[in-house]
Image (tube, rainbow, N blue to C red; front, side):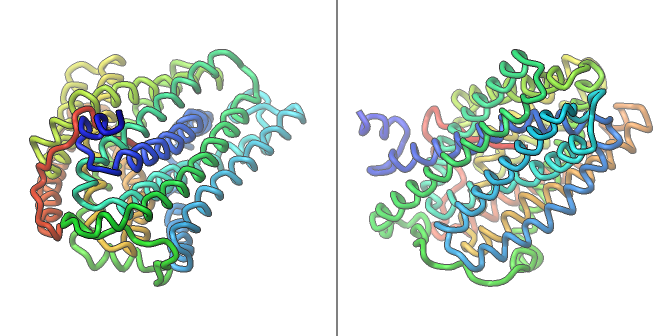
Length: 462
C-alpha cells in the first residue's frame, strides 16, 4: 500500500515517511496559528483603523529586533536545539497571554474594544497583535528553512507541494474550528481557550520536528549519491557566525536581494487587500465574538479554496510553467483583482478577490518561492531567511499601510489600479528573473519544470 502511494505521489523509496511526517508537522504549525489568527485580527481592529496602522509600525520595528536576536541564538546552537527553543518560546508566551486574560476576566474586566475594557485588556490585546504578527512569519519561515535543510532540490520540487498541503489542511481545520467555537459562545474566556489550543498544537509540532529530524538523518546516506543537491545537514553542527550575518548576506547577495524584493512586493499587495477587508468587518460586526467569527470565516473559506486549488490545479501549473512564471501569477492576480474591483466595488467582489489572492499566494507562490532557498547555504537559510520572511515582510506591510492611507484619501479605486499597474509589471519581471537565477545556482542545473506529483499541494500564512 505504501509503495503504491509513493508511486502515485512520485516519491522515491523511503521518501513517503519523510513527507508524511513533514506534512503533519506543517499541519500542527498552521492549525495552531489559525486558532490564534482571528483573535489577533479582532484585537487589532477593536479600537479602529487608525490604531491598526500604528500597530503595523510597532510590528515592523519589533520584527527586526526579534530576527536579530534569533540570529544570535542560531549561531550558538544546532537545529535540534534552536528549533524547539523557538517553538517553545511561542508556547510560553501563549500561556502567559492566556493567564493575563484569565486574570482580567476574573477581576470583572472586559476584552479590548468592549464597554468594560480595562487597561490590562488593552495592553494584552495590542501586545498580542504585535507578538503574533511577528511570530507567525517566524514560525512558518523556520519550518520551511528546516524543510530546505533536510530535502535537496529534486526532493523539494517533488515533495514541497505535498508537504504544503498538510499545512493548508491544518489552516482550514483551525479556521473552521475557530469559526464554530466563536459562534457558540460570547464568553470573555473565548480568546484564552483558543490560545491554549494553539499552545498545545505547537507542543505537538515540536515533538514531530524532532521525530522528522531523526528520520531525515537516518535516511541521509541514501541521498549522498544523488545529483540534485547537497545531503541533509547533520544535527550537532552549529551554524556559527554572529547577530548581523543575515543582514550582511541579504545586502551582499543579488539573489537574496531579489527574493527580499519579491517578499516586499507580496506584502504590499496583501496589506492593501487586508485593510479593505478589516474595514468591512469592523463596519458590519459589533461584538468581539462576531468579529472573531467573521475573520475566522474569511480564513476558513480561503484555506478551503487553497486546498482545492492545490489538489486540482497547482501541480499542473508548476509543472507546465516552472518556478519563475508560477511566481509571476500572483502579481497578475493582484492587478486583475483591483481592476475588477474598480468596476464593481462590491462586498462580494472584494471577498472573491481576497480569497483568490490568498489562494494564489498559498497554493502557488509559497511552494515555488520556498524552493529558492534550497540553493543557498544553511547559514543564510536560517539567518537571512527569517530576516526576509519576517522583518522585510513586515516592512512591506508598513509600506502597504501607508500606500493604502494615501490612496484611500484620494477616494478612487481607479487611482489604485493606476498605481498597481507599474508595480505589478516590475514584480512580474522580478519573478521570472528569480526562477532563472535559481536554475543557474542549482548544482545539477535542473530545469524549473520538473514534474510534481498529482494531487500535491502547498501552503502558509500571512
